[in-house]
Each structure stands twice: as structure tokens, then as C-alpha cells.
Length: 409
Ligand SMILES: *Cc1c(COP(=O)(O)O)cnc(C)c1O
Image (tube, rainbow, N blue to C red):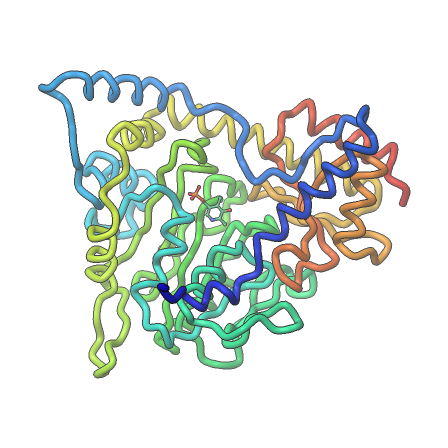
């Protein structure tokens, strides 16, 4: 009999969304006439930009002709897409084409990147957190067991609550790898230039590497917020950035993302010599991945055309207007809400000192609205609740009207 990877036994099941589905199904069974609206979805709902659709149709036609057919492409991605990414998103930031790696999305990249680090590397994650960073490190054996307080042994947790404006504070101890996500899922808050600069300075002093998840970058509206960590001086030596077309342009089902890994980012080998991380990732990526589909990369490239930019901006604006409607609605009934300005997530403070699961039940029963309990993203999410702006406008409006009329506060 083959022995299994014991580390998998340390993981808890994907309890959160199963439990939500269970409670919703239970409610619907008892109240078949109820029109339950979900403001819990973490997936986009609006179609792909027409510019991408046209580019993908064209690419399909190329595949139909032996003269233009393409088989395996470069594992790192086609030059045409990498060029557009650098010109549009990293202009003047000194990023070279061989520092960009195209993938099938940021989830894979955020999950896979830990493979190029030592199993002894000490990781820091925020609490609450997007679960992928933590779970992939648990699987790799970089943590101990889950403790009663909901934290894994051997991991440094950085709490993000209203008390610190949802900006993680520097750890008291040394850490090797730091996962930061801004704009943040689930809190909807974006890190300021100053906050990010503190982390870059910490990484320089401690020889740490920052893994910066910028999947929601396209939602940033405030002028003074950094769009990329590489806008921060010195970040080119200590940071890896993750980007995705999923939330930017509706590619959640189409799949395309990328990682930016400057050659100047280094780690140490066991004998103490400094090694650039870029060749390690290149080795990993080209060994385990055979490239994102040509058709999809053409679709992604089209986002950078004038029409593509206009179309994606309109969709983002649509979601942000939903976020605005949700946030205003909450505030009008005295609920404190965060986020929703530079992100499609609204993170609300649960009223009446309820637990986030009790508030889930209350919202479902009184207003027939489904959201996500903050406790599902980590112990510091207790007392908070996530609503998303990815729904249809009419449903979002209806949900907020109901919230105002029906929720008993
Ligand atoms: C949605 C999301 C991603 C992106 O996932 P893809 O695999 O690119 O679809 C990455 N990080 C966070 C925090 C997300 O919420």
C-alpha cells in the first residue's frame, strides 16, 4: 500500500462553502417561496469583453489552418502577450520579458510558488486570508498541526482588523516568506504606499521575500494607491507579484494569469550563497506546465487594445457601482462597512455583537440574503461578514432594499 502525504491530514475540509450551501438549502426547503439572493459569490457574472471574444474567434480560425496552426507554445507565455503586459501594467518599472511568466491563473501561481523555497522557510500570512496561501504550505509540510485557536503551529499570523485599519503590522520575529494581498480578499481594503514600503524595508532587513497577490489591482480607484508593489523603491529585490485576468476581465472560467519575478530577487542556498529565484521558477514552470492556450493568450492580449481597455473598465465600474450601493445601504441602517472602494468586496462589522455565523442566519432568515461569514477566512474574521459586488445590478439593489426593510437591528 502506498503511504499518503501525511500533511494532507492536517487540513480541515473546505468547510466554509459547504456549510453555507447546507444552511441555504435547509432554509429553502422550509421556505420554498423565498427568493434568496446571494451576495456571497466570489466569481464574476458579466461576460467577457467583446474585444477578447473577437480575438479568440480569430485565434480559433488560425488553429483550423495548417499554415497558421500552433501547437506547444513557449511555457512562459507568448512574447506578444508579455510585451503588452509590460507596456501597460509595468511601464517604467524596469521589468524584462523574461521576468514575466504566463499561467492558467493566480490561484495556481500563489499555490505553486512555495515549491521553490526551503521546507524550513518560515511563512507569514494575514488573518483573515485567502486560504490558498496557507493550505499549500500545509500540504508541503511547512507547518505544524492546527491548534484550538484556529491557527496552524509554525505559521506567523498577521491580524488585520478595524483596530489596525486592516493593514498587517510587521512581525516581532523573523519570517522568510510573507504573503500579502492588496486589494484584499476578503476585507476589500487596499494597502497604502507607506504600508507597503514598511514591508519592503522589512524584507530587505530580514532577507525575506514578499509574495504580493494583486489579483484585484484593476479595482483600485484611489489615485495615491500603488498599482504594483514594484512602484515601491527596493521592491524589485524582494518581491514577486501575482496578477490575473480573472477579476480584471472576466477570465475566471477562461483561465489566464501571470507572475512577475525580477531576476534581482534572491534567496540563499544551504551553503549560504545567494541565488536568484527567477531561474528556479523558470525551471519549475517549464517542467510542470506546458503553456496557457494560444487562443486564451490572444483573448488576454486583446484586453490591452483601446476597445478592450474601455470594455474592461466599464465592467469594473459596474461592479464598483454595486459595491457602492451595498456599502451605502449598510451605512444607512447604521452598519459599519469597510472596503468596496478599491475592491469588489465589502467587509462589514457584524452588528449586535453577534458571531459571524449567527449574522449569516439572521441575514438569511430576515432578508433572504446570503453572504460569507468572516470567521471562515480565519479567527480574526470573527465578528465580520463579507458581501460581494459581483452580482447583477437588479439583484444587488433588491437585496439592499430588503436589507433596509427587513433586517431587525
Ligand atoms: C480570485 C483570486 C485569485 C485569482 O484566481 P485565478 O486563479 O486567477 O482565477 C487570486 N487571489 C485571490 C485573493 C483571489 O480572490
